[in-house]
Image (tube, rainbow, N blue to C red; front, side, top):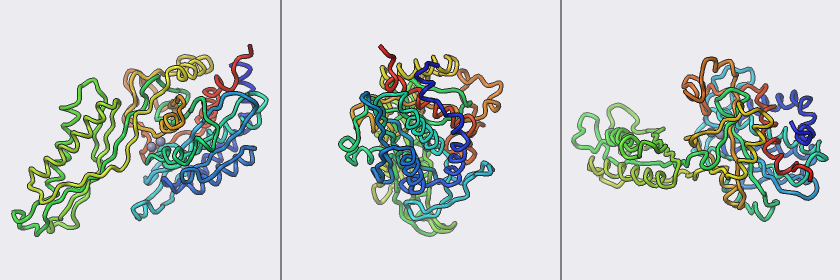
Length: 423
Ligand code: ZN
Ligand code: ZN
């Protein structure tokens, strides 16, 4: 490790117990998207204690810290703060037992099932070191704690006059914990995460008695046909070398066994790795929904509503090469994976780079016990399906060494801009 990077990371070891305690606290107190009040309060208080200039309430519950150390490039580091409506089943001593009222007014369980508590902890560890080791770097760091990543909260922060209120970044950096062995980090140049589009569909039938279906238009059968037909879109319409997913993740109709309902409601999630496939999928889904309604003689056109949409997350080639080189020289080449294709997951992080006119670099890092991967060739076989993935009620990153590594990755990635080699 270079002397500059060592100076930047000095004191990390003795901060780890407090960071692990912070992680367990955040994990036990997850908050749904746009409700990150407690988390944002903790973030703002910690940043102020560390000596950062803090702005709260950016784009909702977002928090932005700014710290300067002389002239030099501006680096934006971003962590997301929200959790998911999932009932935790990890059995950990610090597992969440919390519930909250969601945007639809329903009480739901809440869990940090995507690991955003890891991201918040790691960025607060990095900001502590940046403040304590100010002599070791030059420039300005903008630390962004973003609300509502799961539902696309980043554009709201950018739209909240981000560019006018905060220093304009030379690069935007972010990371995500993944169901891979702790110690591995993965990135790629170009498209990294897929585009994601979520739609809500209401199919209209004509309700009636369960004993006289001929007098009705049954929306349950219509919905079943839509679900099955949608599964042919990727299988039969998208080229085999393109990455694409169409998932119907919720389907609701009816109240009891002898009443045929009037309507059926579906939510559909669509993932794609290129703009062309994205529009192909959106067109095909709409065509199938409308055609199946027509095939059932629906008395009314189906309603198709956009819930949210994220574009493809793209890593800038030059900036990614700098980060990869730093990872490789510091960690060793066998710990740094160059992904061959974009992941099917999605991110709204790209909104910062796009909205602020700066290159972005995004990477994922393993957070699970390497012992659970014994005998698995990750590059050959990928992550085994029995390993709990993000959004699973069993997804449980191990705090040691994941938190420490996440802090290191953030500062390693920022180092090419903050600690340029002396001429
Ligand atoms: Zn997620
Ligand atoms: Zn996530």
